[in-house]
Image (cartoon, rainbow, N blue to C red; front, side, top):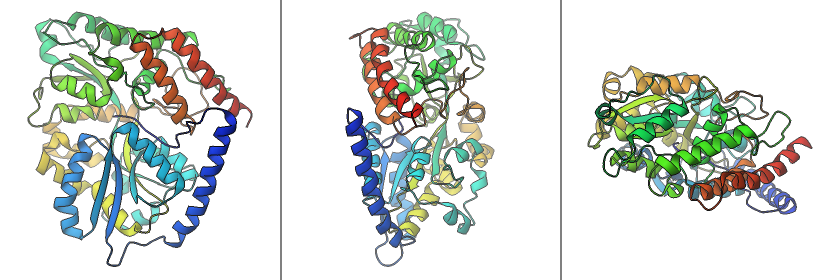
Amino acid sequence: MRTDIPTSHVTAPGRARHRATRAAVAAAAASALLAGCAGAGGGGGDDRSINVLMVNNPPMKTLQKLTAEHFTEETGIEVTFTVLPENQVRDKISQDFASQSGQYDVATISNYETPIYAERGWLYDLGPFVTKDEKYDQQDVLKPIRQSLKGADGKTYAEPFYGESSFLMYRKDVFAEQGLEMPGKPTWDQVADLAAKVDGERSDMAGICLRGLPGWGQVIAPLTTVVNTYGGTWFDENWDAQLDSPEFTEAAEFYVDLVREHGEAGPAQAGFAECLNSMTQGKTAMWYDATAGAGELERDGSPVQGKIGYAPAPVNETDGSGWLYTWAFGMQKASTHSEDAWEFMSWATGKEYEKLVGDEAGWPSVPAGKRASTYDVPEYEKAAPFGDEVLTAIDSAKPGDPGVQKRPYSGIQFVGIPEFTSLGTEVSQEISAAIAGRQSVKQALAKSQKLAEKVGEEYRNR
């Protein structure tokens, strides 16, 4: 996602400690909520300032720069940013929102944690703010993205900064030199064959880049889409763990073998950022990852601008396999600066901000994938050759039915339950160790199966 994604990290081993942690978090949240509700609707007065905690990636860096130059200048609202790498920011957000300390008014959250945080009472319902803001145009937000940021009660609890699916990016010029052609709807077997053919054809250029970095939003994200299209799932409809099933094993072995044989250097330490750098610097011929990466590849000054082709997420047994994800802004319920926080959020996620980015940083850098109107802007259509592919991928994503078998949870590249932050992270460490050659895939999955069985047992007994 580009990404990781994150929430209530339960890292304590053992069920007793797990329950104790949850009880402590619940008590702290309940206490803080009372204080938060007392200050609801605040934000006026002389202290016009908010604190924002957000992930460290290129679109957010642009936001940080433009906020000081434009938003604060126009509104007088000072914005203090805390910007951290993906895995670190997930931990910090979950800790601060769980305690409802109110240290941060706004944070970058995703469609994974939004419904979980909403259920726990950690977020403001944004409906009243949207209703009062006549310029915001909520219906312009793409329906799959808009729906993914609602709680179980149907209310909106976050607004998207950018949306994404996943697709395959490849060097058109390198393929042309080798007489190779990318299929219109590639299978993973075809991708593996192409990776083998282009691997090493240019000095220091690997065949493909795939995430191997530990993290439930790092290696687990693309790997799970491969698992889905190979017919696997984390849990079957009865909450029986399936990580050592033939389908999950085949998908994981394929992924690990592909990145080890034809992938980037040091794949066990490569996440989204590392693959983006590798593709930008001409060190890989293909890259399967978040559609949001395309804007960076095509930005003004990029060494590979105009050289990249785009194909749908590769498949095996399913018709599609692209994920659905959004980095969005949520407002902590304990914030006493809600009006100012909404003014920032609506500016950063609105139509005018996208035009500002287009004018200031170039149209390929626009944080797209969230508003339908973006794709009608002539400047964006011209500068973003990947636009149609992104819209198609987002529209065709199936978070409720991403594979070939029924499952009791929602989510394509993640399992939409609170325990997944811990489970996914622990499994990612095992998979990354297999990519690094420290154990076999079957050994990694045997350990992972035991972890998943504990989670599945809890849900079966509820």
